[in-house]
Amino acid sequence: MAATSATNGELGGNALVTGGSRGIGRACALAAARRGADVAITYVAHADAAEATAAEIRALGRRAITIQGDVGDPADNVAAVEATVAELGPIRYLVANAANGTFGLTHEMAMEDWDKTMETHVRALLSLAQAARPSMREAGGGAIVAISSLGAQRVYDAYAAFGTAKAAIETLVRYLAVEGGPDGIRANCVRGGVVLTDLFKEIPEWEAIAAAAAERAPLGAALDPEEIGAPVAFLLSDEARMVTGQTLCVDAGFTLPG
Image (tube, rainbow, N blue to C red; front, top):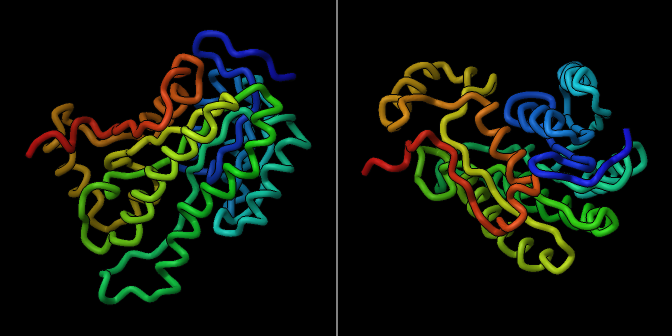
């Protein structure tokens, strides 16, 4: 299906979602497809999960492709953009979701682990945005959404590298918004709370953590990945056409109590 102009909350164009095989990335890819986007998803190792997500997108009547690549490698990011353009056409929407890194205390952190965390977060966003910008201009504008976390502002045990990287992403998004504005390119972040992904559920005490988060949150719940995907799709859409350079906190009110 060819890209069409977006109307109301529909997405009239092609989306690239990094780390779209599972968890939040999968939810973002499906949310974009439900709003009308054709979607390319990247993955590192979970080819079967990526293809399963692509099959779900196709079942919605949209085109979907899968691309193997590591967001920590700028060459892979350029290749992902080029593959998306070649298979689907110009990119209008970019969701920078995939990330990797190391948990640890600042006085114990090896420099190579720190660098890897920065590479797969903030450098990845920069290289993806640089690669996608010409295509977005060709498409008549576009929207970028990066995934952050509460650790960008709050301090969590052994989360220094991740938290710093997420804070850097939120800062970089503001620069992308200002510099991309004249070309009709918006950039925003979604800062998620405790999200019940498969990865989160690998934590031995995940149920206790989720219960504590739900007890603290005014809305009384932890989040499912779909509850991040929906706001991401909104920020991509023309419903948010005057929203740029912002970080939307989606945490069921977790951060409100003192």
